[in-house]
Amino acid sequence: MTDALPAAPPAALPEVLFSRLLEDALDAVIIIDEQYRIRYINGAMQALSGYASGELLGQPLNGLLPDAVAAQHDNHVIHYIGNSRPSSVLGKIREFAIRHRNAQMIPIEMKALDLGAVDGMRYFGAFLLDVRERRELAAKNASLLAQMEQQALSDALTSLPNRRAYEAHAEQAMARAARSGAALTVGVADLDHFKKINDRHGHAVGDAVLRNVAQVLRETGRVTDVAARMGGEEFGLLFPDATLKQAYKVAERIRAAVAAAVTVLPDGGTLQVTISIGLAPLVKGATLDAAMSEADKALYVAKHQGRNQVVATSPAL
Image (tube, rainbow, N blue to C red):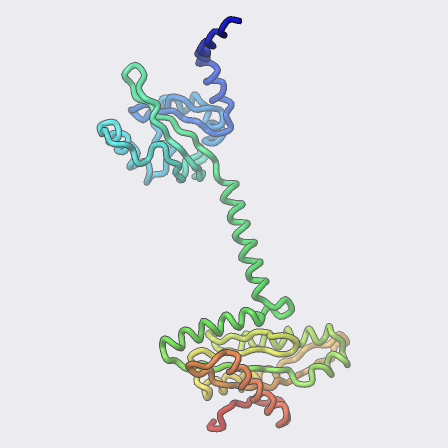
C-alpha cells in the first residue's frame, strides 16, 4: 500500500467571484482611495444612498457624510496614513449617518477597513448597515415597555396611580423628607355610602362616580400631591412638604370639590356624593404602614361623626 500524496493547495479564486459576491451582498459596501474619492459602491450601497454607481464614482466621500463628520474625516485619513500607530477607528463598528440623495440623513452602522495599497495607491473599504428598522423597533419596544410599566402602576378604571405606585411615591417622599427635614402627611379617603350607590344605580354608575371623583382628586390637590386608588372606593393621599395643618386645608378643599361634583345618570338625572378623609403625619422614623394605620383611625372617626368631613390625628387644628 502506497502512502497517499499530500493534497495540492487550492487554486486561487478568480477575482471576478469576489466582485460578484460584493455586488450582491446584503450589506452596503464602499471603497475609497487615499484622496477620499469613491472608487466602488455595490448595489446595496446604491439603494442605501439613492445614487447610481456612475454618479458617485470619483466623487469625494464627504458628500455622503454629515457635516460634523466630513469636517474631520480627511484629517483622520491623512493622520492615519502618515502615522505608524494603529487606528482608533478602523476595524471598529461605529454608528453615525450618511446623506441620502434626497438630503435625508440615514442612520447606519459602519465598519471601515484598511485595504492596503495597490500600485502605490492606498485604499479603504467599509461595510454599512441601515439601522433605521432596528431603531424603529427599539423605539416601539421602549414605548411598549413604558406603556406596560405605566399600566402596572395605574388603576385601569380611574387612571390614578394604584396602591403599588402610591407606595413607591411614598417611599421617595419619605427619603426626601429624611434628607431635608420637611414635613410629610398621608391621608386615606373613602366615598360615603358607595355600596348603596352600586345597589341602587348599578355598577356602571358606580364606576362613573369613581372616575369623577378621581378627576376631582387630580385637579384639586397641589401639583406635588399624590392621589391613588387603593381599591374599591378607597383612595390614598400623599402631601409632601406639608404639615398636618397644611394638608388639612388641601383635604378640606378636596372634600368640598367632591361634594360639588355631579355625575349624570343614564336617565338624565344627576347624582352627588360625599367623601370622608383621615389624615396623619408621617414622622421621621415611622413606617408608611404605621402612618396609614393612623390615617385609617382618623377616617373611622370621620365616618362615625357623620361622614363628609376631614379628620386628622392631631386635635390642635
